Image (tube, rainbow, N blue to C red; front, side, top):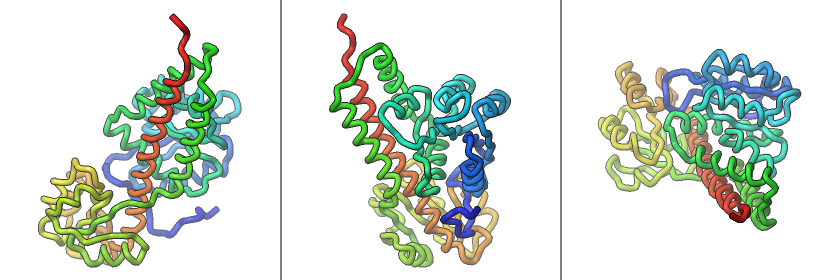
Length: 323
């Protein structure tokens, strides 16, 4: 079965050099096959699959898993219980829940169990799954607290609801609206500012692919306000620029010039950069897909932050028992 958007360009991970492990759990063989084939295109991912929670638990007990992707409705132990048990076994693991419909109750339950995001099935765009796995790996690596705060808010909300409390109807409606907005944002998150430093090939490739992109000088202040910066190894200042932007807002893609050598590759790895097109005379052709994935991942993260904020408002709206 062909993936609907396969182009033969290959995957490749954005940043990072060590393999990360993703465990996908679903009782539908076609879903397992599609997810595994999609994620295995990423050269730095090891993908494991299981058809049930019972099959997944021994894996979780025996080896490290960085990201768990599980269907909510599984035979036997359900996905919510699996996430909770998996998080007990591996507290730093990230978890994504696959669900056919996201209601406020199901999202609260998933977050309370320890999930940090959800994915709607059937998948409208499989790139969203890949972007969400990437975002989860970044959260795990960076140690950000946003998702843990959302989990704690969801646990509090779940506990209050279980105790017989309820949120006002407007709070339920507001959260449902935010869920729908979040789902829509996952389909339209390719907006963003892209800048190119010193590469006509990169400018041409991205503009031909429909991106709004501008050429920017190496030390221009606006470099810190864009989403993605593309710089070429042929630019004599690329190392200085990469080091300066390494801990700043934009993602930096390094396009290998035809003269790029092993030293450039090793330095890019040291700086944890994504080197595009190394060993190829047409490296710029791979840029559009890389930029799309970065913008998609950034859009997903922004939408998740809004969802966490809505969950916080929902939790605060639940009346607490009188002292």
